[in-house]
Image 1 (tube, helix red, strand yellow):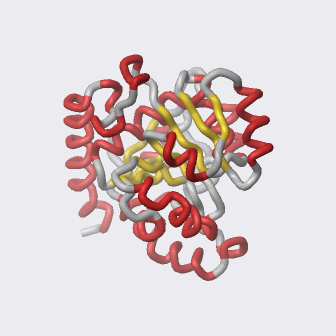
Image 2 (cartoon, one colour):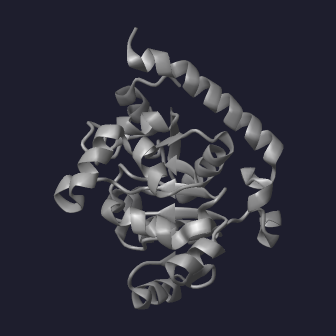
Length: 251
């Protein structure tokens, strides 16, 4: 039996659990622990760790969707300018400030920086939903990228982000495509997702939709390897139907 055939039942169970979580959690699918005063309107507070091309692009889409977003990076001047340009709903701060602010975190940094991000965030990670878009690229990130690529990011990333409720998301579509194709008419770009936590997955599904794309649930974190850097699907924008076809996923 093929490996993907073995994994399909797990994906179905995850989808059923995510659906149940959506029905039971309410307020847009955000868990009780992640509800803030603004959640009566269904909006979230999101901390973006790494406000470069990917983080800045996706964060901007969330601001436009009505979410409150705090941007952080190694360049606070850049982050403040970005927040000023986006206006209401956008702010800037340090990594720790963004970690404390966000009910959900979005991490988009070079993979070699991920261990330090985990140390900087510390206890703020515990129980928090984290969307991880970091890609291990050997020529940039060195030996740790080779190891992460062999394991798969769904297995490697949690080691650097202890306590986080991790979802792999937004890692395999380029920022230029996301910038130009968000909310496009017709079939939307597909964004693959992988997670072990059904409630965290449901929040990620909503945030992908709010950004203007169609979420494609691939399976548990072990399946993140199917859309990691270097795979046939990586870096090639496709519709959700095309993503499912390439990855052998039944609708």
